Structure formats: C-alpha cells, structure tokens
Amino acid sequence: MRPMNDVLIVLALALVAAAATAAVLARDPVRQSTVLALLGLALALLFAILQAPDVALSQLAVGSVLTPLMLLLSVRKVRRKGRADGRADDREQETGSAGEGERR
Amino acid sequence: MSRRIRTWVLLLGGLGVAVLLFAASLDLPEFGGDRHPYGARAVEAALARHTANVVAAVNFDQRAFDTLGEESILFCAALGTVVLLRQTRDEHRVRPEPARVDPPVRRYALVALPVTLLIGLYVVAHGQLSPGGGFQGGVVVATALHLLYIAVDYRALERIRPVGLYATADAAGEAAYLLLGAAGLVAGTAYLANFLPYGTFGTLASGGVVPLLNASVGVEVASGVVVLLASFLDQAVEIEDATEHTASGPARHPTLPPPSEEKPT
Image (cartoon, rainbow over the protein chains, first blue to last red):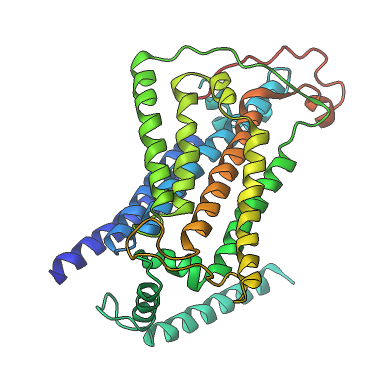
C-alpha cells in the first residue's frame, strides 16, 4: 500500500510541477488563465492524494475557477481599453498579444 | 547600491533562507506517518467537542480567531475591489445586448446551475461533518450563480444578482462572526469560545458554536465572491470610459467611434 501511495504522490507532484512551469511559460494571458485552471486542478488532485480534502475543495473552487475567471475578465477590460485607444492612431503601441485579443 | 551588490545581497539572502529551511526540515516528523503530534491532539479535542470534521473543529473552534482574520481578508479584498472598480465620473454604462447562446451550452449550464448550487449549499451546511465548509461551499454557491451568465446573458445574471443585497449579506456574515465571538464573552467564557451545548456527535447541530460560525463564513464568502465578481464583470462588460483617451494624450483622438459590444467568451 505504501509504495503505491508514494508513486501517486510523486506523479501528482510531477503534474503540479509541469503545470506550474507551463503557466510561467505561457505568454498570452488568456492561454495562461487556462493553464492556471489546469494547475489548480493538479494541485487539488495532489491535496486529495495527500488526504487533505478540505484544502483540495478550496483549491478546486478558487484555483481552477475563481482566479482564471478574474484574470480573463481583467484581460478583457484591458484589451477593450487598448482597442478603443488603438482604433484611432496609435496602433503601433499595440503589442502582439493585444492584437490577438481584437480577433477574439 | 550598484546592480552587482544588489545581486550579491539577493544571493546571500536566498542562500541563508535555503540553509535555514533545510536545517528546519531535518527536525520535521517523518513524511506520511500514521501519528502526528499536533494531529493527534487536534483529533482528540475535536472528538471531545462532538465535531466530526476535525478540520472544521480546528478552523472554527480551536483556531477560530485565525479564521476571523481569514474571513476579514476576503471582506477587505471585496471592499477594496468595490471601491477601486467603481464607476467613476468619466465612465458610463452601456447596457449589454442580449446575446445568442448555443442551445447545447444553454442546456448544459441550465442543468448544471441548480445542481452546483445545491452542492455548494450542502458543502456549507455539512461543514462540521464532512470535508468542506463555509469557505469552500460559499465559493461554489457564488460561482454557481454565474452559470446563468453562460446559459443566458449578462442581463439575466444582473436580475438574480442585486449587488446591494449581496454587499449587505457580506457585511452581515462578517458581523455575525464577530458577534458570535462576543456572545462567548457575554455567556461568561472567552471571545470565540464555545458557549452552546455540543449536541449529538455526527448530526447537523453538533459541535456547539461551530455550525453557526461555519454558516456565517458561508454567507460572507458567497456574498463576498458575488460582489467581487460583480465589480470585475461590470468593468469587463458594462462600463465604458469615454474620455479615457483624453487623459492619456490630449487631441490625439478627435473622433472616437463607439466601442462595439460583445459578450466575452
């Protein structure tokens, strides 16, 4: 039973490390919020395996739902602002990722 | 301080923290053991107070004062968000257009909404018995309401979400926790100490003051998250800042076309 448990813990830890690295490496905020949601899911799995269901539940609700949602909403607000500005004459100030947002 | 010295100071500090953390980890109890000195005491105290969920006993009984701090953090965060993201004088609201939703998405969200809401309320109500509690259930309840935005549109969400009411409930939940703590003083024990009968182990009313504190946190968190998301959603969907461009650079945008309205994905 113990080795089985250890394997599960190591797997979950590796999943968390992979998701966290991906979240850091993702440059587009929209994609990043999706990866953050996955990271939240991986962390919830880790906490569940470590027999901490209370923490896993919080992590699931906050880490994989609330945080990405607030991030997405902020990105939308910022891009809308940028689009209203960029429409007139300062298009050169728009970065690549903001340009992607216009097509969303 | 030059850049080079700063880097060295940072490295030195980082190294010091690493050494201290490693030294501390040598004294930790073994990973994943069956017995844990703190865990055993917490379980004993929880069982003595008829609280089946030991985590709830720690949160709302043995460490109730810590939870007061955590609850207040969320309260202050919601308050700060409401102040920062309020509609300022140079901004105006644009009524969002009704949006077309794909029937499968609408069906799924409309089925998921009541189920999620029920699960959230269940998690809040059974905080003293099973994993979860006011915080976890509160977030689930708050996010469940927002499935209506996915299923229908923003106007429908606004109809079931009068922000003033939820802001009041947020404050009421926070106040209830403080007053329940003070009730301990009135009853002759101590602040946030239990003053109610413990009840039968494993029933909804067991644990003395734990279910009440748990419920007040549930109300506070659910309403706080709704208010928090409402501020963000209002900014993202409704509030337009018409004169924002004049602040960034005068006379750069003589004619600004009205920004188009669309539903965020």
